[in-house]
Image 1: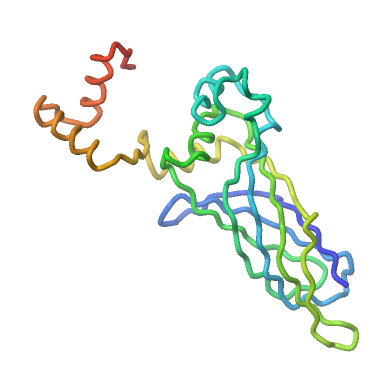
Image 2: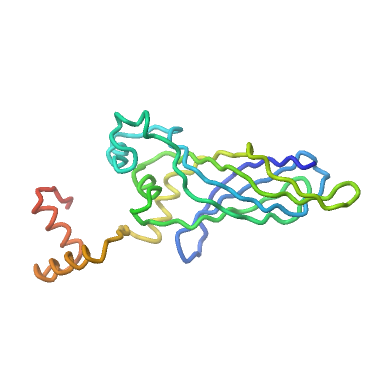
Length: 216
């Protein structure tokens, strides 16, 4: 009977992709190295284990929108769900390697984007939790199916620099903001009325009028 174990051994960004994408290298090992696994319909829940790292004062300030004031982190600092991944693992004996591909967004309406952006260095602690169905052959060569144990999981520490370099490649010195159309129309009217050449100039002027310092 199969007993699969999982280990994330690396992460990379593909050289060519239509959008920011992270690929995690997943090693799957069966405790019986001679047993034939026909296929695995694997489901992965990926969480950010936020309590497994320290945060600088700068990061704490930027995480206000995610976890509230640091004084409340004792109750608000909880794992963040990043995504779910479905993967078909082809037949193997002993062990095999598969890739978990995750499209990423730089939309600041998404809580994980806010979290990643707030980190200035170090690593992002990730928790992979696995489930799904294993199809395998018995000694009589009869096809059987069993579930991946809900206890199966793996940890990985993703370098913050890898995330930063990926986003800089796709969105050099820029970010995405999602606005309600009515708010956008008001901003656009303001930009035209003030004869401001760029959106950067528009936001800079609004910040200055509100008494906010604008970095030069």
